[in-house]
Length: 442
Image (cartoon, rainbow, N blue to C red; front, side, top):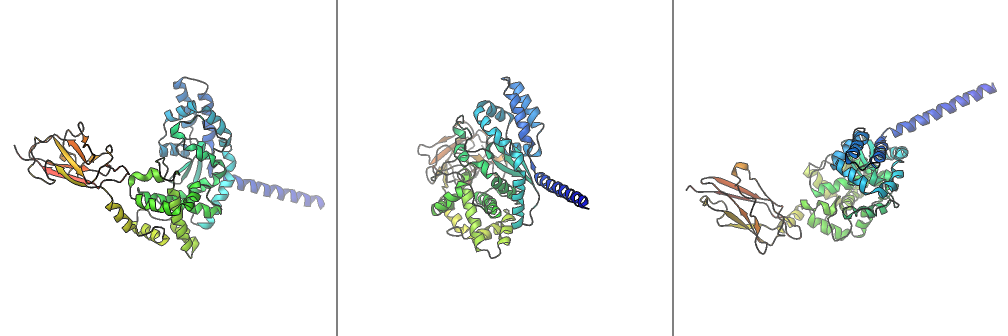
């Protein structure tokens, strides 16, 4: 009898051990790391030769062609080229040696990530499944998403304070302070942030929607993991909240200002990049704090429809983040834009323009920066756009005028669309202006 009891205990022990192992294996299935192994296999062959043909062959055959959907996705999302990979491998050997061991640990974080996903599901039960892919990129993203795929650029996401950056040129200098934040320790947070993106609807191309989109992922991750954001923008933003809001209100309608607020290196007065993450985070935090039903607030944030302007406006209004309404802020923006105040040697809409005319001069309400320009087709299409407009364009001495050459035909209607790519020195965009006229018969 005693032996039977021992046998039963052993059977149960083995059963539960196998069940636990099966559960842990299941948890890891959402995390795919084979691209990391393939990259290092390719790397080890690439560095054995100086012949570029062989280097490209090894990269293609051992990394690209063996790549997962995640590698394909991150290459597509960031437009990586084979040349970029080869240049990076040849130019930064100390960096790669310092990052290698960290990236090879990716397979060990699967269970931690799955635990984070389960925490996310407790505050958002509607969570849809997604896969996390660890790949090696070429320095343009620590993490992004495509559809239901979370794409991790492990050469950035798994860096730490010991990662060697001494070989980096100026265009990669922004990575040094990022590595100083020890991103490898925040890998779960980064992955859950990106996982939230797989649940969101597509954002539209404007700065306000984009900062909300990122703010939602950041704030929801904080709530799911019950830990502060490790990203320095959030703490910095809270310490400089009033001024950041003032500047953002002044700049958020400028399409050209993306690089000042999100994922770019355009200088700003704060000396801190990516402060759009803070703006979006603060909008979400304000919305959440006023909500009586916190779970419903999380659901609203994640399921925001960025193409529905009234829905976005209602969300922002409820958050009470801005100093006034979006309508007033947009009116303020429009009032500060430079305008076209006239053209010469004829008035716009003229119907009797001399077809022998060789150039048209556009006059602005104030001085522009003297280098950014752009003209486009009007609604009548290419046939109504004059020939000979490229060679001979010139700015007036004080940058309050711009002259464009033209080659005209008699008895024809023409359109030239002056776009908002014309800018002031402080980056305010010109109000677009359509030049339309008709030439007379000779």
